[in-house]
Amino acid sequence: MWALVQRVKTRGVELVSLILLAFAGLHMMAMSANIVLLFLGLETASIAFYVVAGFTRQREASDEAAVKYFLLGSLASAIFVYGAALLFAATGSTSFYGAGGMKDFLSATIVGEPGVLLLGIGLVIVGLAFKVSAAPFHQWAPDVYQGAPTGAVGLMAAGVKVAGFAALGRILIGALPSQIDEWAPILSIIAGLSMIIGTAVAAVQNDVKRMLAYSGVAQAGYIMMAFVAGSEGVGSMWFYVAVYALTLVGAFAIVAVVSRTTPDRSDLEDWAGLVRRSPELAWSMLVLLLSMGGIPFVAGFAAKVSVFTVAADSGYLWLTILALLTTVVGLYVYFRIAAKMFFAAPADDAPALEVPTVARLTIAVVVVSQIVIGVNPWPLLDLAREALPF
Image 1 (cartoon, rainbow, N blue to C red):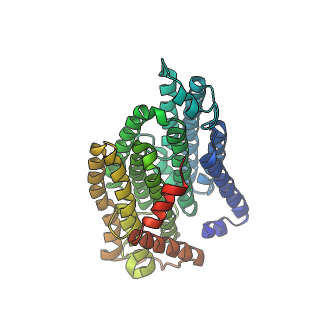
Image 2: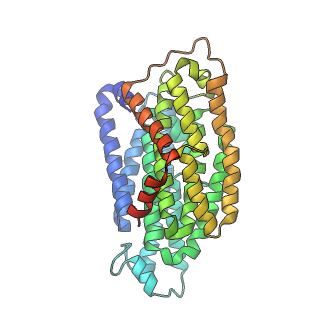
Image 3: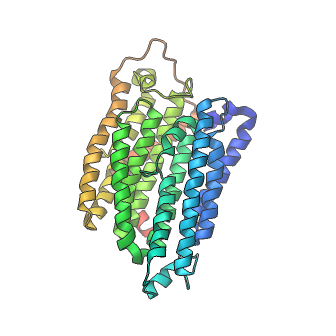
């Protein structure tokens, strides 16, 4: 991120301001107990990220990413706000909790004709599924990940994932727990599609940023598995989100360093022989890839076991089996990158890699946290279960 600010020079202040504005919106989105305030936070963050996606305007891919993100994001926002309006029409409230809130109303009232309520739930799920890049609402993610400034993509992807799932949890688990029999099957289908589509398409990509984008689609599916357990899955969901957000930040920090000389792309061939050009980057990326793949003794393994367990205990055994299968197939995606880094010879004209101090510090913190959490996940998992209810 710091390298990106230095590269855009006088526009660096604008970029930092946009990132801060976006995270203010994400914070409002995650903490809101009212669907109107949640929507305001959603739009604040979205508009800022639309601009960030097209910030490096000298690149054609950046303009394309911004336009696609804006058009599809606007459609998703419209779907979300229509769903919010239908929830208000069905419950008479925009608040999630408290006297007169959605939760109290639905707990005390038998809805004789639930069509408006169910349609509102469905539209809200679609709107937020877009934000967390869950299939089949993920079409924006690969192009935006590839075209947006690499130094900012990790923050964008991680922040949106955290806030998007927080908002989904506040609405479904916090405000609509009595309707779990209606919305849990919808989420299970979206989760299954995300795992299948994300894993299958990632396996045929030759651009590392697009690989990570489609991997993120599959990861969104794994996170959604926790929702089918209702309140019992909240701790597992937060644990997985925290682990994956850290992984994203570290992975894109490494991608930013490797692709500094070719900002328009991050071809897999550019990673050939990375262990000879920069051993610290290669070994750090390996740890993060192992975490995303769910290999034991790194944090991703504990995260996957946690969500798989709560989904199976809630009666969604088929979803757990599907998740296990896609996890195995997904290892091929991560091992492709690892094999290129460790077993391929670097190109003769491959430039030397200089790791900025800020990037080195960020990567080191992320890698160490992945190993520490992987060896002993219980403190963070217990904290997620106790401190972050909806």
